[in-house]
Amino acid sequence: VAEVRGRTGERGGPERRGQPEAEAGIRSVLASTYGDMGDYAKAEGHQKRAVELLEHVRGSRDSLTLTARSALGGVYIQLGRLEQGDSLLKRTAAEQSALLGEADPKTLTTLSLLASSYSYQERAAEAESIGSRIVPLLRRHLGDSDPVTQSAMNTLAVTLRDAGKYAASACLVVPLHW
Image (tube, rainbow, N blue to C red):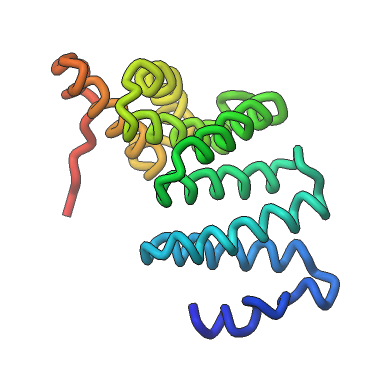
């Protein structure tokens, strides 16, 4: 991370050479890497910049821009800025649904993040509503072994369990294979 960051980080990287999309891609990878390491503050800075670059080059309603914006919403959730994350994810999901369709994997990923946020906030009815709608679509389009599908299934299972719907919850739990 330090080596890539040193090449692209605060100096502007490829953008200075007229490659803002390349910089946006690198910054999204850095944001994901920092997020995987639990450094969400650094992830936020890189993901914000990726969104800014893509909005400038591709427009605010472009598929790549919306994907980057969804990732930023996920970072906000991890930072505990749930209202900010929810707002961004709701708006992004609506735009993705209009552009790509609700069954598109990118739209479903954004909706899965939003359902997870609602679940964290104990907003069970909203989490269940989204989860019940997207889990069948995720299973059909991405399959049961996909990480987004598994996350959405587990979020819905926890939401249903917490609501006392044990049988429905048990059907969704994804077994871990070591």
